[in-house]
Image (tube, rainbow, N blue to C red; front, top):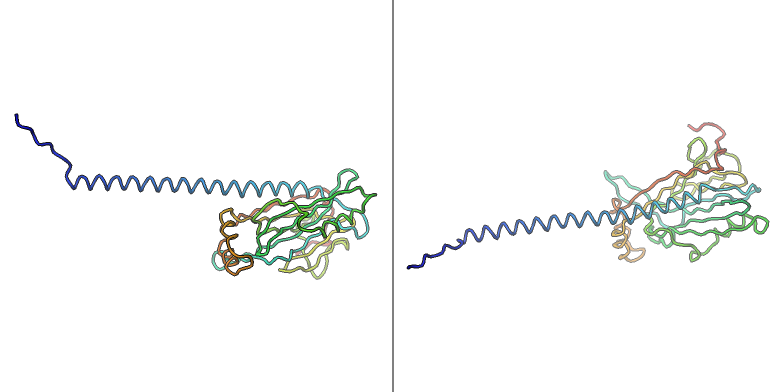
Length: 275
C-alpha cells in the first residue's frame, strides 16, 4: 500500500499564526502594564492620602483645644512664614502657584496643665521638607505659660519629632467668628490683643495674646507624591535643576485643606463688618 503524503502548514499559515501570537502577547503586555500602573497609583494614593489625613487629624486634635493664658502680653498663638525659599510651580494657562511654609506655635490646656506645641517644616532648603512637631507642658505655678511658648520658639530642630515627609505647602490662616480671614490691613479691625503685621510673600504674621484666640484656623497642606519626591531627592540640594523639576511637577502635589474650629475662640469679631 502506498503512503499518502501528509499535508503540512504553508508558509503563509505559519506567518499568520506568528502574527496572531504577537498580537496576543502585545495585548497581554499592555493589559499587565495598565494593571501595574493602576496598582502603583493606588499605592501612591494610600501613601499620600492616609499620611496626610492622619496629619490633619493630629493637627485638628491639637489645635481645637487651643487655650489662652489670660495674662497681659501672654502669647496664645503665633504664626509666620518660615525662612525657607518658596517653591513656585507652573499651572495650566500660564498660571502659577506659590507654595509657602509656615511655622506655628500655640497653647492648649488640660485641667490646670498648659502645653505649648509647635509645628515646623524642617530641612526644606529647596522648599520641600518634613513637617515636624514639638510639645512641652507644665503647671502654671511652676512655669509661666508664656515661657512655654517661648521655649518652643527657641527649640533646636533635632528636638522636633517628624510627622510627614515631602511637604511643599504648609499654610495656616486664622479666621474670626464671622468667617473672615484675619490678615494684615493698615487699619486693624480687632482688639489690641490681636497683633497682625505684614510678612514675606504677602502673608500675615500674627500673634494672639492675653485672652484672644481665633474662631477657626484653616490649614493648607501640600505633599509631593512618593515617586516624585524620590526623583527630586536625586538632585543636588539648592541646585537650579531641582527647582526647575519642582516647578514642572505641580500635578504631582496632593493638596489638602481643612478648617478647624477653636472651641474657646468664638468671641473674636472685627469692630465692623468687612467689605
